[in-house]
Length: 299
Image (cartoon, rainbow, N blue to C red):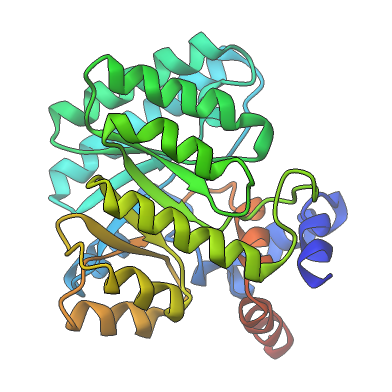
């Protein structure tokens, strides 16, 4: 119920105006690497110095015209070049809706292909983030096209709470894909996604087990120590299995795992359009919401 309430609040213009005005000062900065690329670089470097690999995302989602999508591509090209210039251990994650997929699939494919080629030339990697269920088919279709065209420096995401994800994994396995396994953070109806946490966790374990067994690269994105321990027990090793967590969430656990010799990536997005991202982070864990409220009340 709390999760649904917070996600519904994400659509409230009144709450959005308030949080945009005060949110970074009241605690949103805990989860966002900065509002500008310069701010994000400082955060990413600090995380690298702590032994954490990182990725970054320009926060934002659906664009309304091809020119806007082209501007996003230009920003990501700048991000990739800055990562290389700063010698950061950072790759890029992005959303296809930010590249224009809701306008035209070919537009988004062309934009992403341009970025994947740019990343390859700089020795970097692009992760296609998964969005809500209506965009799963087109996301996987574009990912497959890129891999079949010979682009190996691209991966995508499967969401454990979707009933379809195990079948999607089986269809992708011949590509030896680089996959991030997540639980899922969007509001989805019960005919599309598991409504119960126990079922989501069980599906998460099955996806990780199957991906690891087939020898691809698997990113296990969770803050749940039981799921982390289960993934590590599979014996894949850091060359094929990476633990991924969010900036500002369970920071001490991330550092403890690094000290144990595990490969850990901290996802540290940036940008001025951080509100929807923040609301999903608050919905995922009550502790995140309590932190935000405590900060607000102490001001």
